[in-house]
Length: 462
Image (tube, rainbow, N blue to C red; front, side):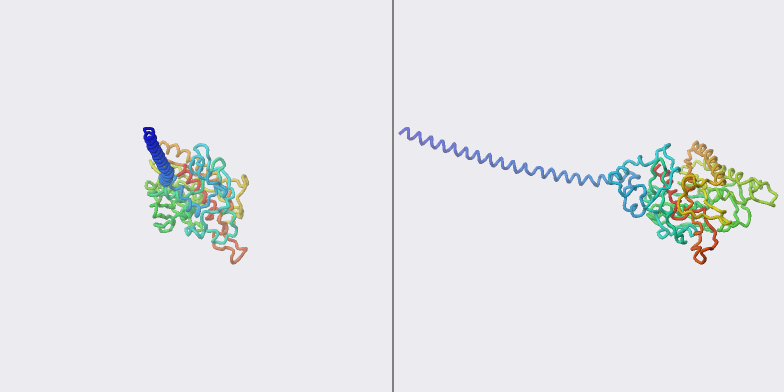
């Protein structure tokens, strides 16, 4: 009997143990299942957070990049791609190499003492000009070669390439951004007017300038870019010193120029201190017949037969006038940037302006093919000598004076002048008509546009 009771008790005990084991097993399985499910959600949460973090970083990064002024203007690619060709980069340039160039501008920016922007070659530029005569309404009629009927267009497809460094193409958007609230002036003769129209046409790819001033003869003008509060002036002052000129728009004089060699032209000196950037030049006008004055007294002349005056020669006047103007600049304490530009070569052949000279070339000249004319050599020698003296004095007085010597850049471009196409369709009535040629100024668009690449490199990138 006792044995039977023990067996029953043992059986109940075993059942209880078995149930406990089953319950423990089920509880462990439930806990394991719950742990597995909860842990299986963790990667999704972490991934979502990582993705959210990466997305939130991207706009911050782009904002940070755009803050420095130089990069802010370089990054917006669409307007540049649409308006301005990029001859520096080929169509096969990879995005990686292009981004590397943007991140390391020091590789492209010429280093001081290692780059001569004025020694180089004209190389093919399939992209062509940055603007056309139809896209820019500011081109003077005498330089609007395509409108005037010039049939060849090969002269438009070359760009200036310095030999020992890279020269980025002019960036109109960046230029305007950097020049916000600034004032520029190009001071000099008709070549300066030629140049200012080139600059305005390139900038018009971003914003059209508004003419806000002109003098009575429309020789001095001022333009305004409203979105940038930026002005560009062309100040007519062909001698930089005071002059009474008796000449029409075709260059025909009725009397000698009366030149005051010791009195600066107030057309530019009155505006001088209010300007942030200037390009000052002169040159060819000193070759004209003139009577020279100092201290309100006639001291001599150049080409004045029958006047009973001492023939001084144009070098006498050029040295004095340049020295006086450069000394004014060098001692002015001006805080902006001042460029002095040397005079430009002409390419008249078989004569000069008024005696049948012409320029019929349609391609750039090879190196050594064209030699600088003696008169141009004399002018340039005086210019470089006076600049050297003035630059040393300017440095002592904290004046930022730089040289623009475009002689070599333009000497090899006899194809870039209007020639007979300074007039509207000169051969329309008579294919053999004898017309006046312009082998001094430059077609727009044309080689003079590449002055702006060099100027931007020196004024902004440099």
